[in-house]
Length: 285
Image (cartoon, rainbow, N blue to C red; front, side, top):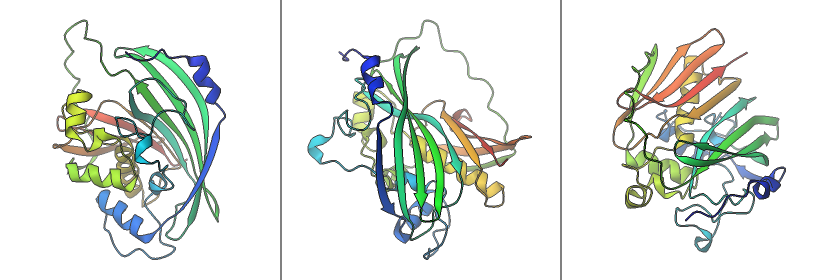
């Protein structure tokens, strides 16, 4: 049974901060370009890295003895010890000021900005918001807020039969790929992400009850950002907000979609049925 959630205790983590630094290497840029379906090229010092390279940098490293059954570090430390077993990225917002470049020393300063709780159709949800500032020798490159959601292992049975999904949205711009398990493994390796839901099929199906390996939320967001930049003359949006809608699973085709709006672009990832799994909004104003 899940330990009781003491929100007052968890909110004591608000304001805690940490800092970490790393180097943007040519090898990292090559690996990330390959994973984002870009030309790999031969990156040289000073060349721009993919826009979300910071998600691969200075990731926390823990000994095997300090990992939990899901592959994540045991609870506590910088993030509050939320006593709910499932942890995933719910969404966030990014402000791009300048690209990271090969050879940059990048420093990420992180701060817990909020801890909240709500009850949804699947039970108790706890949201932890983390603010990040990424700097290089040239100054601030990225400001970001990440929203992490923790939830219970079981899900409530629906009170009534599920409604038919709405018709898939129509996209003016679209490209398709396949959510191959190797793609998920590569991104886990690039981000040093040990979460078993992305590579351990026995765990994700038998323990967490999902039908297959789960596509990373950050990887979906990274693909949306790069698609937006490509459609806008290789210029990243000034601000990009995103939120997960439903899981995207391995082994099927998925699409990256975009429509122009008066303020920028509405973008989304869709599964093989055309239903959105992540939605994003990009603005260049």
